[in-house]
Every structure is written in structure tokens, then in C-alpha cells.
Length: 281
Image 1 (cartoon, helix red, strand yellow):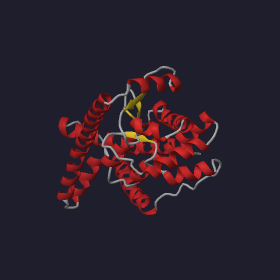
Image 2: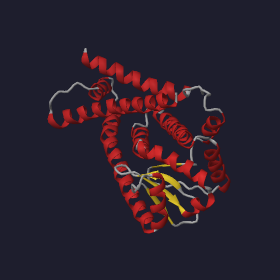
Image 3: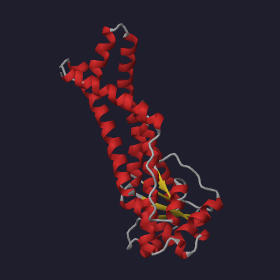
Image 4: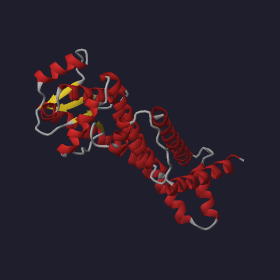
């Protein structure tokens, strides 16, 4: 259920965003080259001009111009923040502990970065080459079974490149802000990935006991921090879903769409569809 849900969320969000971005690209190409390309935004601005609302047509032009700029700005900022964070974390690297954990859990691959820091840190970061980041404070807080469960959880995020996928959802919801269902989809996608990572950890360790104990310890510690770069964290999100899933892994939970956001998004998509059909006819 959770796997299908996460796949449906990322595919639908990507499809909506790609459709709008492609239409915007065609509109910009038409304006710059003078070659007639049938697209939603050209039809929209022409209609607004005809009904005497040129200011709204200008607003559409402004939206088209700023959308790719916002996407590039988000990507550039994220790459900068991730690179800066990785440099700072690398400076705190504990080579001995990192070597031990990589040998024990990653087959000797350099997938786990251990940093000397008193706060409990557990996250997976990186787009091209994701890494699991653990702190010495976290290792001291958890027992061996809890630590293994947490590492298996983070390995799921690493294997499936969840930091990159989550950032894609963030960009879609931020850039196409006028389709509000995308923001809800991002939150639901994050929840689904966390539940799937928990299930992976339970399968790997054979029990939910250590995973649940590790999660409770981190919640009681209450020192989790949010960071500006894209990452997947063990104890920051979807706590209610995850606790319910740990208690009853076989239970199914209703996939309730938010009525207001869904209606607003449907209106936007319907309007774009009508404009596209009108342009093609």
C-alpha cells in the first residue's frame, strides 16, 4: 500500500509539473522565436487581451518568466547548502567509528559518515552520492540493536535516493504553488517514504522492538534540528503514521485528499485543460 501510494504521489506531482513547465517552455519559445506553437499560456493571454484584461495577461507573462528562475534559484541554493554542510560535517568526521560501522553494515563501502558531535544526528543527505550521517551523540544514546535498526532505516533512504526525490517534490510544490495539492502530495510522500524505511528496517532486523525503542529515545531527547539542505531524517517527520505502523504493520490507513486544496487544484487543472483543448481545436 505505502509503496503504491508513494509512487502515485511522485508520478502525479511530476506529471502535473512537467505538463505546466513544457507549456511554459513552448510559450517562451514562441515569444522569442516568433514560431507559432500551440500552448495553454498563449491561448490564455490572447483570451485575456480580447476580454479587456491586459493586466492579467501581463501577470501570466510574469508568472511564466519567474517560474523557471525560481526553480533554478532553488536548485542552486540547495546545491550550495548541501556542499557547505558536507564540508562542515567532513571536518568533524570520526574516522575510526565510520570505518567500524561501514565494515559492519555497508560491506566496507564508504556510505556512513560519523561526526563528532554531542547532539543525536541521524540523516541521509546528498543527490548524486547520498551518505548516511550519524553523530557520536547518537551512537552513545542507542544500544547496538537500536543503532542497527536506525542504520537500516537510513539505508533504505540511501538505496532509493530519497533526498533527491524529496527535493524534487519540494521544487514542484514551491514552483507550481498555484496547484496547492502539490504541497499536500509532498507531505504525504515524505510520510510514505518514512513508513517504507521503517518496514525495511524491521525486515532487516527481524523485529520492530529496536526501531520503536530508537524512535522513542530520539523523541524523548527532543533535540532534533531542521537543516536547510535536502535530507531524509530518522526522527523528524510522520511520527503518528510511523507509530501506528509499528503497532500494527498490517493496518491500512485511508488516503484522504484535502477537499479545499483538491478543489482549487482541480479548478486550475480544468482551466488549463479547457484552454489547451480550445487551442488545439
